Structure formats: C-alpha cells, structure tokens
Image 1 (cartoon, one colour):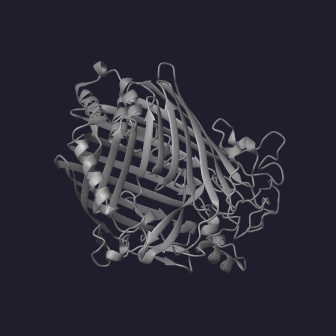
Image 2 (cartoon, rainbow, N blue to C red):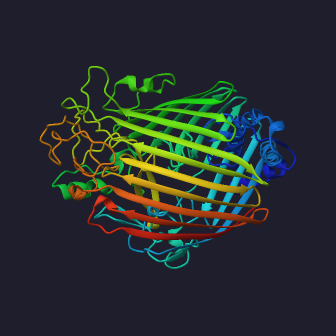
Length: 605
C-alpha cells in the first residue's frame, strides 16, 4: 500500500513539471506579502482598503490588483506592482514541495516574571520553526491543497494542576534559548506532534472560493487586533465561503472548538476548590472522549462606495454552544440576523461595523465598532435601572499611510482602541443570568487543544477577537521602511491601560447609582467603565480577586529589521523593551521590566 501511494506521488510530481495553471485558487495567508503590497498601493492611490476579510484566494487578489492604475504609480511602486503580478500569475504545478529552515536565538533579562509564551512580544506563533516542510497541490485550475509540517517545539511542556497554569521550557526560565528544542534544557520529547496548523483544501472559480481545513482568520484592518476575528488566534478548524466582485464581498465562516465541558470541571465547593477544579481539565489524556458542540458562525458584507474611496463592512456572528451535541440546522441560515434567534441559553451574538476612507493619496483612516450587549427599547438601562445588563462595546480608530521612498516603501500607522469591561463575556446556558463560580459562560473565547510531552493535552483559552480582551485602552504607533527582496526596518510603540477584568471574570447584572455595592455579591454590582480599578464580581481563575485594586499599565517599545543576503537567505533581529506598572492589577506589586532580543537566520527553497 505504501508503494502505491509513493508511486502516485511521484507521478504527480512528474506531471507537475509538464502541466501548470495560474494560481487562481491558491489561498494566501492573512499576512501574505501580496496582500500587504496591494493594500499599500491602494493607500498611495487614495483608494479605500481592499477586503480586510482574510485569507484571500489568488483570484480575489488578482481582481484587487486589477483595480490599481499602474500608469499612475511611481517607478518604485511599479516594481512592487510587477512583483505581485508575477507571483499571482506564476504557473502552479500539480505538486510543489518547499522547505524552510531557520536558526533563532532568544535572550531576555527577567527570568522570574516573563516565563510564559504570552509574556513575549515575539511569541510562539511569531517564532520560526527549525524546519518547515511545505506541500502545495493543484491538480486542476479550480482545486488547491496546502499543508505544512513544522519541526518545532511544543508551546507548553508541563502543567501545574494546582494553579491551572501551562508551563514551558522555552520562554524564559533561562536567559538564553534557541529554537533547537532537542538541545538541553529541551529534548526530542518536546517535538510538537499536534501540527500541522495550516492545512486545508480549497476549490472555487471566478468570483468565489471555498476553503475547508486549518488556517488563521482575520476580519478587519486593526494593527493590534480586530473585534470579530484576529489572526492572533493560533488556528481555526474552519469552513469558509466567499463570493466577491469589484465593489462587493460576502463571507460565511464556521469554526469549531472543544466544548468547555472538555476542559472545565464544574465541581463546586469553597472558592479555592471550585476555581482549582474549574481551571484544570478533567482528563488531559488523548483517551478523553470528545463530546459537546461549540461553534463560531459568522457572516460579513463588504462594499465600496464613492469611486472606491470609502469601504464599509458589516459583520455578525454567534458563538453557539450545546453540551449534548445538538445543532439546530435552522441556525445555519446565511442571511439571518443571528441576534434575532433569541436563544440566550445556547448562543451569544456579536455585531461589528467597520468603515475606512482615503481622503487623499497616501492617507487612510479607519474605524471599528463592536456591539456585544446593549439595551433594547423597554429593557432596563445600565446605570439608571435595577438589574440591567451591562453595555458591552468596543471602539477602534486608526490612521495609516504608505509613501514611496527611494527604492522602497515607507508605512506608518496610529491606532486607538477601547473595550468595555464586559465585552465578549456573558453568562452560560443554565438560563440563570447570575453566573456562579464553576459555570462556564458563552463567551467569545475558545480553547486551543495543545499537545505536550508524553502525549498529554492542555486546553488554552484565547479571545477570538481583540487579543487583549475587555476592560482595556490601547494606543499603538508604528513606522517602517522596506525594500522588498532587500532589507527592512521598523519600530513600534505600544501602551495599554488594562483594568481588572479578564477572560475569567464572572458576568453580572448591574445596579444604578445609590445602591449599597459589595464585592462578590451579584445583586450589588455597579455599572463600571474601562479601565476598572476594582474587581467587583468573582473570578473563575483567581480566588484573590479582591486584591485587584489598580489599573495595569504596559509599555512596549520595539525595533526589528532584516536583510536579504541572497534570494531566500535572510538574517533578522528584533528587540523589545517591556515595562509593566501594577502587574496583575495589584498596586503593591513592584513594576517589572524585561528586555527581549531575538536574532535569526533563515533559508527557504
């Protein structure tokens, strides 16, 4: 049988050298170079942004490129236009192999407070694997397949059941480490066997595409993240349909995750015991039976107005949850207003609205609004009436530029984001709006099922949308210069005020001013604004939530760059200074600082 498949593969490779087609159905990742260049060219010509719902097919990128008036481009931009054109219209073989190799070293100064993947600016997803083997297949013009097999270390190497904390050998226990995971303190046992994280099949035709498999998703132009879907989420097991023309695009996306019952144990007791049971998975072995349904279902409309200078996008989604695996097929209507199903016990809905405008060449301004919870006419108004649902919004405003300079491109952006304390959070499926310890909510959180040494499983919850979650105010600025295929340098400034709320904050109704408020009493919680300096409700991950008495302030300043020695052969470096005041939202905690440095050498075939 093995001989048969090897023979079939060899025939495919040989045929690939004889027959080819353009890469119309190739799926380009959300951060692909062609999309980045096309976006910059749109800004230089005073056009609204191309579709920000990624990933994109080759056919869609070709049509984006066709909207650009190449005759009006500066000489350096014409070179970029031609670079994208040549890549998109390159003939695709039936089967194409690729190999990427990288050697990276990581150095940092604080080995006490910065010891998790989440503590690093260049985290697990940004670090390059030691080896990455890529296979692309295109047996026909309308069919495309992709798979990559990274030879990399596991994100986590151990688990503390007492605190529910995932541990790692590679993110700070020592000042110096590399991506050669098989060297001490690591071992071959830390090889990540849960890959691939980008593997899918796709098919389509002119103006439409279908993709099924694992990939990153992103909806929106945000630099620090987006409210509905951000590419900070490691991967989605997704089914995605898009159709588009010059001024319109529709997207329908599903994504499936483990049900919270798989990794949250709802055994109650005193606060410490309940939290401990909630955080630890009931069974971390591969033998655990998979049950329960937890699904993201979203659709998105995008349009262009006023000769392409204004872009609009309206997105709506639900997180649908069923512990007994029930899926009512009525909820799969692609044209329905999901909020109007009124099924609070099974789902939580989210609406986002986006607009961007390019008033002059080289300048684009954009905004996002997320609506998670608001008072309908006749419902109690938060802050004024008793037993009101707290409003939950997200706001983003940004500006960006792209300017040709010499042989390259200068880009820059400035972004402001504010998220309300209860954005993405809501009570669970018990029908009781008073969430208790040990009860999971229907939140815009989902768990990545991480494999680690010895064949064990860790479930790590992350926000699908804005990666910093609720109760935050963020300012971000960056600027960079790049000569594609030669060298690049950029700098980034990030400052965040983050309140006391996190992914394990219990949702609660709120009371009007004048109420005798009390921490931990769900009937006496005030209506609060971001960023909060007091945690009123209980917390699924922290029995000492009452110690949270201040706003955490995070400053990150970073510089990175790279140089291409030969085609496919690159050296690069990144350094980031992180300074956090009131870490863990406790004013008595001293400020912490870490200097993080990454240097790397990569080669790709």
